[in-house]
Length: 323
Image 1 (cartoon, rainbow, N blue to C red):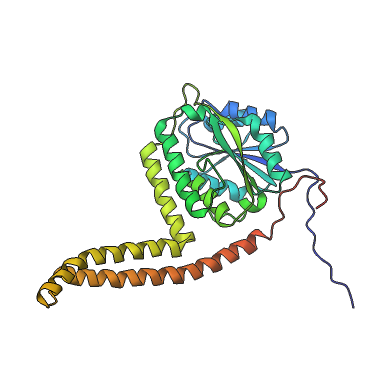
Image 2: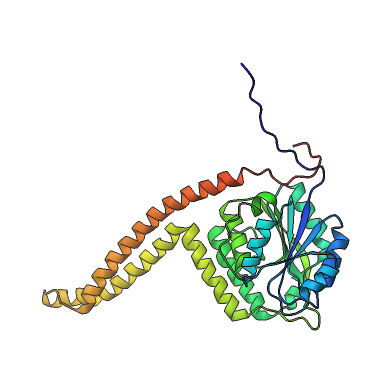
């Protein structure tokens, strides 16, 4: 009986590293960002994805030695989706083009990913981050706490734009967002899939003179908060709809209290509009709970499908590890 041949995927002798830099109007800083990452990751390929910049970002990046590509759909989430789809590598380093993250930490982040066979390593901001705008700092702590309370505490800086990913993370990530909510979705995906992840403290500095931030504390904060709500609904439907069910039932009970008092005093059931409303809220409460049960089963099946796809890819490992 002929033996069955098992298909083997030959791994490259050297780990292919791609540095992904999403950019929008970063003419002032992009040259230094490219130069710094070329210095600290000399064998990496640096990709700069220009997102409809109005200045010379693409031209400056190309002269600095980066491979420049363009994503016409506005928004960081759209750029990251395009980068993850287009670029083929073993390890992906994603960093903003504003020269606020520490390029010297990149080898340490990559080594942490490969040595421990992780799927994501986050560069958690420190030093100058402590003096950063209070609104951003408070929002980061608040939003990170909300996510880790629901999905598990494995990160202190959910909104960091400095991350290293394995190939199997990048190629199985179902990106949904279009804007700055992307960091939240990256973190929630890793936590929900229970991927092995890590975090290393890295220096964070202010933007250099002439460079302006595209972030809005309140606008982007509320967008991220909304995204957290959507992700909880999508990934934890039982908890989400149970909470909705409880709140509806609580309001119904509050509305029903005057009805009960009137009945005890007169022996008659009043036909108040509040009685109809309370009854409707109880019905909605039961339906919400049932929705949570049904969607929890659907989510479980979807999570199994994502897990099987994720397992089709080999983990990131040190070259020559023999595994």
